[in-house]
Each structure stands twice: as C-alpha cells, then as structure tokens.
Image (cartoon, rainbow over all chains, first blue to last red; front, side, top):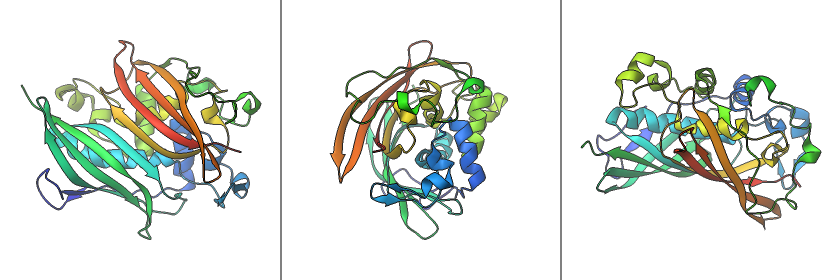
Length: 146
Length: 157
C-alpha cells in the first residue's frame, strides 16, 4: 500500500496490493466463500451465451474485488484506529484467470460528527490493461477517543 | 450448516429454486444459523491475500481495541452462502453479480453464531436483463447487527 499525501483530506490517494487470480485462486475462492456457481468453475458452461454477454471461460467472483478493495482500506484505516463503515461497488467487466487487478481509492470528502470523523472515498479496480473492472464508493470512520 | 455438509453442486436442487418470475419482492428468504470458525475466517482471508494480524495473530488482536481476533468486514461473502439453504435462489447457476453495497457495524468474531435476515427487495428488467435486488442483515448471537447489505443480481433467463 502506498499513499501520495499524508492527510485524510480530499485528494489523498491509496493504492492496494495487486491481485492476480488464477484458476486455482478462483477455485479456492469457491471453497472459502461457498459460492460454487458454475460461472467460476465450468469452462464448457461459460462458452454459452448469457443474454447479450459471452464470457468465453470461467471468471473471478465479483466479490473477490470486494475483498481486495477492503484489504486496501483496512490496511490503511486500522493503522489510524479507524473502521471501514461502507463499501459500494458496481462491476464493470469480468476478471479472468491471468489478469492482474489493482485497487485504488481517492478521498473525496470528510465530515466531523460528534462521534468522530467520517471519510468518503471513490474506489476503483483496474486490470493490467488499465480497464476499469469495478467502480464504487467507500466510507471509513475514525472514532473520537473519549 | 457446516462446510462439511455443504452441497457444492449448484445444479442439484436447481429446479427447487425460484426463478425471476417466482421471486416476490418483500418475501423473506429461508435462512439458517451458522457458527463462524477461526478456520473458515482465515481460509477466506488467505484466498483474498488479506493476512492482517487482527485476523491471524491472537496476541496482537488481544492488545488491540477489539480485544481478540475478528473477521474482516467482507466475511459476509461467506456468510451469504453459509446462512442459506441449498434451494436458495442466490445459488441458481448463471446468477451474475451486478453490484453490491454494504454497511458495517461491528465485526464478526470466531465462534459467533450468525443469523441472516434476507429478502428480495425489488425486481426489474433493464437492457433486456432480469434483475433482482436483494437485501440482507447479519446478526450475531447477541442480536447485534454485524453488517447490512444490498445487491443486484442478473438472473438466469
């Protein structure tokens, strides 16, 4: 994880650990998440058509992005006594074995409340071609120590 | 539910699952309590490459504000399947995740017995695709909210 500024103010940027899914990590994610949807297991099934979409082979679980983004946020905020409070993402394109995805986030705003400081971020996951695979927003809280 | 008796063949029982047409927004989904183990937390963490000491190092976690090992926020990814039965429509082969939003209250911990309240909230057709919005709240054995979330899936036609 790296940061380009040293504050929680707008513009603070985080970059998370790159993640390179393989057929093995996708299989392991099935076992760890209990999500055994054939989208992630069965190449023959994935050669079929899904309405307007054709995947051509197995794809990584969309929620694996959630785990990768969250690792970036918690590695950062735990060090400051903070808590991840919210994460919202939309999947823009599938991730396939052999891809490398990298999460990043930029602080967009923060707000002081009675209980602490809330920080809003835009989050992004890009593949090795710079294409956006997931897009969203997050919110973390640094509680006030009473 | 335990991992040992979990049915991993999602084609099995598929005819028992509700289709987009049969899903009624507002209707609760059947759920089952699940006891979260340290082993299942750490298995999930390793797979996503997240080995923070709050999840792995008992002494570190004990000295932290959490006073013990916790699960990462995204443990709901496992809980969604662990707390639902084999005929739950989230398992329908071809279910495509379109997006999710989750709010986190307190962490789940090893040994917690987790309960899920879940339902379809809405359904619609967009760009010729069949969508269902689902909403979910996970509670621990003290009836404290762990996290709540909403997601959109594209349903198999």
